[in-house]
Structure formats: structure tokens, C-alpha cells
Image (cartoon, rainbow, N blue to C red):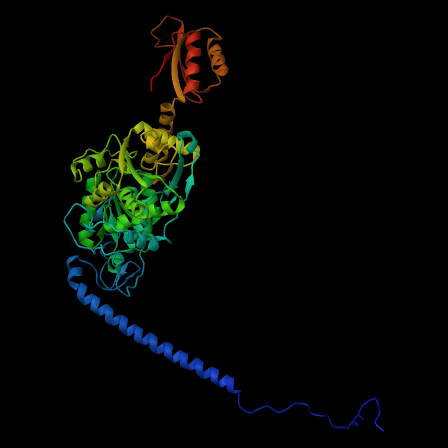
Length: 554
């Protein structure tokens, strides 16, 4: 009978029982297959890299044979990549020892930057209108202008290529809308890294250069926003960049350009001297001399502003751009906007003192002998008309060009600082100045975008502009009156000012050179008021108490 507790247990013996099962003598089949596959992949990768190196060497030899005459004509170095400031066994085309022949340089030690670059293939053309470097004796840039107007496809290609290199700046609804009776949207291009919209055209221009020219370097000769953008983006792309500035250039601009990574050379007392020197260096060393002009590549980069405005603000009625002689932003953006919506009005604004664009449109060709100002306040607003491409696009696509006064520009700068906390220069604020001056009454009740394209203004100049704008806006006024030289008369005057709730900015007394009665004092006060109405109230109160008070006209 079987026990319910289960089968009987085996009796233990004195020897230990071995419970392990002997494994196979060879490794598993899967391991062997994995090792063989890895070996095959490694061999294929080695063969592929070897074949690729052979093809690259073959292509480089072909390129060197094809480019040999051009390199000889440009006096370029052809001994290989730059290493630690030397090119092969020969001295470089420019070095600190030779800079004394080029111009005055204050900070040479540690200021020369070189990079090692390897050119592996030719640069592909993204635009059919792009041109390679051709040495010219013309006064314009070495990138020859194209007579063919840019297309919307060119602007789209530029937008795709520069999207990772520039900011997509906001286009925001402005608090100024209620004050001027329309929906105003401000495209804040002054928020770019160098404070200017010129970055868009510059980065596309630099990336479209042949790689051989990128290795040689570029050179510019001005202190404009264009040069600042070239200095920064060329350094970011590791393109050697040289900036020639006159000795009268603002020290702040020189410092900023150096901080961007450019080699800055001070030469000559005028901009013309610097440009002549830069062209000579370009011819001797193979650099590409860049000057802002209306090439198809540059205009396509600037035209990307129009694309962004159209995307950011739906149901637009009009877009206002700065114009003047350098109207590339106006022309390029108009090409994009009119392609997307022909009913959008594109308006340009320039200064009444320098109506370069209006005169050029009237004459049918760029005006070269137009008087311009070298003052930092005007910037590119007073520049000469630099090309027929921009002029042709403007005449074909732009609906209206208006001119504003200098006073309107200053008040526009004040409005931007007060309402938008935006520090714009004359070029950046000139678009809004057309609305401030009431030059566009047809836009009342419509949706309008204004491009604030630049914000590079020197601090001392900013202070002068704001002080002048406050006076023009009737918010800072000055008056003088004659009081008897008795205790308490000035305190009575201050009581009147306190009663009228004005802020005293400055008060002066003159006792010696007073032409009135003896024992009198002439008091001059500078006060701040809320607005024009408040100023009128103060004036009436003072004339009632002091009939001889004289107001200083602005």
C-alpha cells in the first residue's frame, strides 16, 4: 500500500552528489555569428572611408588645377591650411609685423585669430543670381550686382538657410495703437545680436561665398551696421575678417567690432581713405572687399523680414519700412509681401533732409551726387542710393514713399523708449515717425506693421536725442524773469511752480550781467511738464504773476 506522504526518500550515502550538467565545449552559435557580423561591418567601413578619401583627393586636385590661374592673379597663398598663423613654409599674407605698413593698430598682441580649415568640396549655388568673386576696379563691392530681380524662391531659400543663425524677432501689438487710431504691430529687428536687421543679408551673403574665398577672408571699410554684422558673423563662421575704420570713428564702435572677433585697423581721417586702403589690401592679399549693395543674395536675406511679418500678423493692411539710399530692406521685403498678398500696402519712409530715394525714383536712376550727412545720428538714412536693383524693385512693388522731418524722428524715438522700452536709432525709428507726423492718414483704423530695424545709438547721442525730443514734445520748457534781490522772492517763485505741479530741472541766478535795474537778479528755470496743455497752463500762471517773464523758444 502506497504511503500518502509521497514516494520513499533515497537513503543518503557518504559521497556528495554532483548536480551540475556539463556544458558544450564550443561557444554558442549566436555568439559566433555576432562576432563575424561585427568583423564584416568593420571591414566594410574601413574600405568605404579609404575610397572616400581617394575621391576627395581626386576632387581637390581637379579644383586646384582649375583655380590655379585665379589664385596666381590674386596673389593668394596656396600652401595648404592655416596652422597657428603660418601657411606652409612661407610667411602669411598678413601678420602683426606687416600691420605697421597697413595702418595704425593699438592692440596687436593676442588680437590675431586664425583657424584651421579643410576644404572638402565646392560650395553649391543656392541662388541662380549668385556670383563668384571677380576682381574689379569699380568703386563698388567685389560681389558684382545682378541685373535680374530677385524671386520669391530666392527669399524662401534664404529664410531656410539663415533660420539657425539669426533671431526670429517678435512682431508685437503696440500700446501706441490707441494714440494714433490704428492697430500698430512693431517688428523688433533691433533685437538681433548686433542690433540691426543687416545681419539677415550678411549671414546669407557670407554663407553663399565659395569655400575657397571663405578660407582667404573678407574685408570691410566702415563703421556702419553692415560692418558690425560682417565682423560678428564672419567670426562665427571662422572666416578671417578685417575692418578698416577711420581715426575719427567712435571708440565704442571700435571696441564692439573687436569684441565681435574682427581685426580692426585704424587708417585715414575720412571714410574714403579707409575704403581706398581696404581695396588695396584686398587686391594684395586676396581678401574679398565687401560693401553694402543690392546683390541678389543680400536682398534675398533682407527680404526674409517680409516673410516673418506676414506669418506673425494675420490680415495685414500695410507694412512700413525705412527707406533712404540704402533701401535694400524695403525692396527685398516688398518682393516677398507682394508675392504673398498683392493687396498689402508697402510704404517706405525717408528723411526730408535727404530725399535720396524719391529723387532717384523721379530721375529713373540712382542719384550719385546727392548731398549726405556724416553725422552718426543719421546712419544709413542719409546714404547714397547704392544700386539699380533696389531702385527697380522699389519702383515696381512699393506703393508709397513719404518723407519726415528730423523733429518727427526724434519724437518717434521718444515714443518707442516710453511706450515700448525700445532704444532705436534714427534708422529704426523713422518708420514710426511717419505715423507720428500724420503723413499716412489713410491708415486710420487699419492693421499696420512697422519695422524697427536698428537700435545702435551711442550713449551720449541718445542723451542728446531724448533731451531734444522732450523739448520738441513741449514737456521740457525754459523761461527767465527778473526779480528783486530781496529775501523770499525766489521762494515765492518756487511756490508758484509747486502749485502748478511742475518739476524743476535746473535754476540759475545772474546778478552781475543784468541789464535791468540795480539790485535785481535774473532767474532762469528749466522745468518738466506733463504735456502741451500743462505747459500752457504754467505759462498763463507765470505771466499773471510775472508779466515780464520771457519763454525760450525751442
